[in-house]
Length: 290
Image 1 (tube, rainbow, N blue to C red):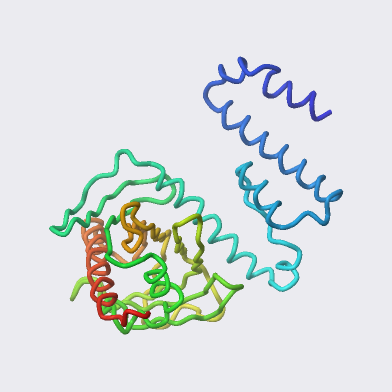
Image 2: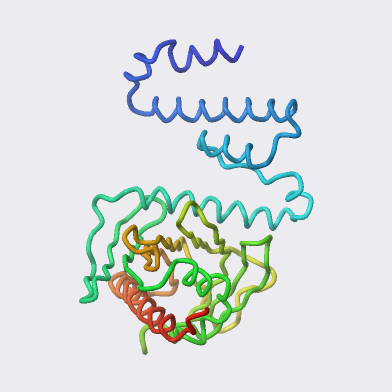
């Protein structure tokens, strides 16, 4: 039945597939993924002892998000699984954006080489992309931005408070951040509740986050709850010097409130410029052994 259906939907030759137009191509792609999921689910019944790493590799090659292993499922609640799915989806979106090198508009060039770009994406809106080179290795920067996230308010004056509300597994955090006044007398303090995930792929570190809801931190009276549509920082060692890092940072925030778009846009890319400057200063003051 499945082979017959596949032939009817996709045609029986590669030449037919090449002639597909309009919505036919994504339809074939979606159908192919469903077939792949079916095959994998059937295979799982017969190869129950297959290592999780093999399952993840197969899913990755097919472009399908892998499901957590049974051992992970046994220890995570449905709500925690929801958080993991959120960051997984955010990471896939961020990687797709990073692969789109064209049509990014330059917003600001710094004398030190740092550059801020922007681009609008469907269903997400305007995304800012910061590019910078830092004279510190990726693992050191990753440690400060993820493992020691709750200390960020000590060195970043743009943040007045950081709370880790919950730790989910080894590399996922539920957090709340309270900003300082974003633009004096223009944009007041905001708080964000986000789910964040850190991981390493090849030689690069990824730190991804997105807005979420949690009973652990409902909206606070007198505080505007803003939302992080997508944040993703990629830390890659330079090919010519592994002790230096190319930092790429995607940022899309909804600050809420009645703020003109030009003011919001200025505040967001300005926040990236300031953050990178504060990060450089903080890293330069760290003991060499850190």
